[in-house]
Length: 87
Image 1 (cartoon, one colour):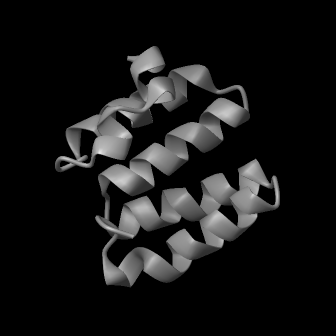
Image 2 (tube, rainbow, N blue to C red; image 1 turned 45 degrees about the horizontal axis):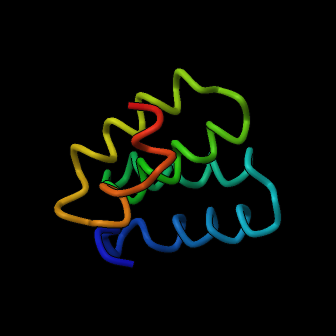
């Protein structure tokens, strides 16, 4: 995963696993922890989509903004319909 530093990758991957199971609260917990260790566009984006799934749209918008600001040219983030819908 580009943009996620090695030190945060195991926790980030746990977030992906939780997301894939539909456990959005668990995913959010892992993505938030990964973001604290090594913030990136990807960690903020995944926090944002987890928050969106949990109905926390104001918080999601804040993290979508951080994802955009930290995207470092990542087109998947920058061109995301959900991100651009929030911003």
